[in-house]
Length: 142
Length: 286
Length: 208
Image: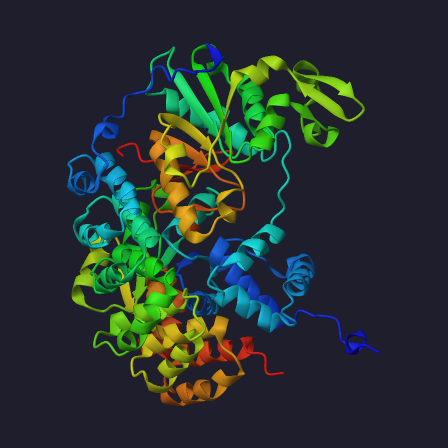
């Protein structure tokens, strides 16, 4: 009963944040890749083999060249095979920013710094990974 | 006895390597993992010695803080292999004839003129490779006129391109049939390209940072700008990318070198993935 | 059909924008033209006119087209000067990430002019402005950068500003950063990200 692991793309211009998020998500048994801004993220999306699209995007808002909102808008214009839930993670918690995220096509929003269990729980819910969701819910301060 | 006879050789620690690799990746998009340790460490030691910095720490501080930023450009130079030859990174030429040109002509009537620009064209291997690909591998060549424009900042390499004489090493990737068809062997290590191809390509001297030079170019359908922009400083790189954007038709394409990415250069272009290659496109509604 | 040359430039569409006046008043007027290409060419050519800096910065706030904005930022970077720095500082408060990051990129290229403004920016009442200032330090080629960052570790109350500073210190921190690192671990003992980040900085610092 070996299911293929979920694949998550972590998009953030800060190397430490990418490492941190990849560790949190990797500890749940998921496969992760990374990009430093929206353009590189689109390149990663396109580079995925058809049989292995991403199952979740964890996206920072504030990035140079192409910010998180622009990336999500561009992502939502792509073919169905690239579509997956988007978890926006940002330092900004003002309601216009959250609104803009959902308008762009995001599905969930966490404020930085994200607590590991909260991120795992939210990601698990978006991925439909019941096992991890239960574990995170029981452990964590979501 | 000189003290430096007893000095220990420079060793790049894991932390040094990580620090450098992260910085380099941030600036260029090029990723060095542990498998590249030998390659990177060797060149770091060379740079540290050449700069007279004395230690990785001092050298990295210069790299990071020196206002002119010239050490970064030297490092990019040494970390990237830059050699030109026929059919180099040919997957992009495959993409050209399999996808890009078909998309370009979809909006144009038969008999239309297409314009392909190779910049930097260096000693000519790239524009002539494009010419051979068009003649041999693009059926549309019978229905459309194609101009190949070929530019470089260096007049000497332009002259060499117009002489059209190449070494065995330069033609090594060509299928034998093309070599026989388009070249004459004129010496032990000398192959001269057909004068028909030389006369089919338009050569010009262009400095991508000079608006006066790039202004002359417009209605371009496909640009090959490979392994050049990565060597520019941040401001010059943006200016060059914006100039190239202006020369393109809406929907026109630009191909960069295989380790280059617009993610470190400019937000003007859209990413497009084809079977053979990933390229960048000026939006159709631009 | 086939490969052709075109010495006379036949068949190329006429670019009317080259007919417009290229003097300063003409260019400034074209910054507001309806045609995107006209605005973009004007934005580029204003790079020859240092006194255009305030107009270039002002246009950035209103300009809707990304390609024109990109050229406006490039022109601002080429012009430099204190008017540009002031204009860019203003953009740090924008709601639009693209404007803020464009401003940071321009300022990163003007270290001598930007340095006198850093202290005030690091004390700004707006958390976000302090974060973006630290992001700017990440690209700024100025010897005082490590010192500014250490100051943030000692005194900054907002966790994300501190996080941003640790990010940059992973690259530029030295042995003299270690005491501030210890202090920040204590100040933010409840935050796993700060602990993670501080550990990474310590790892990158050579303590030989």
